[in-house]
Image 1 (tube, rainbow, N blue to C red):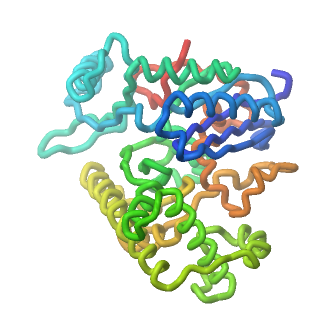
Image 2 (cartoon, one colour):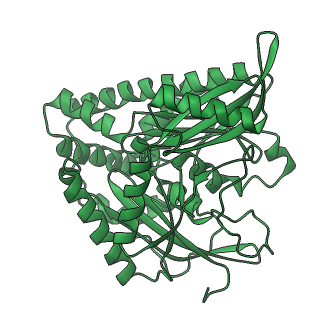
Image 3 (cartoon, rainbow, N blue to C red):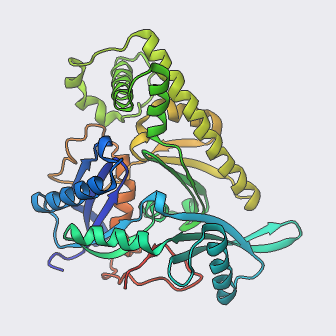
Length: 411
């Protein structure tokens, strides 16, 4: 590599946005070489060919116009192409695990074990009645989805060196902060609320304990608002953005309490120029929107609560102490308030780039400060680095059976 400590590009292709980031690590210090993002217009998501062509063209443009170095990339499979389930085995021997996984993938997901990608995380022992069993998290994807994703990357002019999963990238972006012994002994849940899916990852120390994907996201809020107001999805999205700006402006004036708002204190100062252009919503429209967002938030909170219940029953004595939220919808203050009431744990909004050297970067003029939507991209960019300040570049080889397996690798 031309630059010491230079990492492959981390590429997060979501439903409504593309994020690219490249990091460099020298002596344990992490700096951002380049970062860029692009919005995917909702109108093209219904046409897979048009969407693919747009993504390829936009990645090429970001490579040409940005400061990215090299073509190596680590990307994550789309959430809707990934299959995840937890299962328990009486034995944790590698040959027994392999047989069980092949059978489970074939029966539950209709996959071909000889052709499709199957991997797992060995979580640990759990008690089931009078028995002690080994709990695993199975990750699987059909071969055509993996192949199509790699072909998209290559068509965009990139050289894929690893295909990851969103849950593992999400956990990795926070794992680097778990350095203190007390942090390693605590259980935390990392929740990424995206456009179509919410990814829930429980972690204790530097190990993943439980993963769940919930098919509720920002699009669910917009659909509910659109149904209640009789407007289009695009109009609902615009109105929800207007509601957030209105609440932010009111929060700065002290009308919504003295706590930090969903945008973060850094973002408030930058939004002063926006207030002059702020068109306030009428009271009836505002109330309908708040009720609609709250209804979906309650539904998501119930799903996350079920995850909490499963975890506390399966891993007795291990209590969840905090929940960290990331993703583009983590700025939705109504959602965070509902989750805070329902989950009864310490809640915080992620800052995945905190402590990074970001000199001369503005992240597309993002004014919200926390940059929590970059968590998955950062985790992708960190893949292969174990946190050792003196660690040389590590090969991205497939992990051995029984270890924390966090990606599908292309050899």
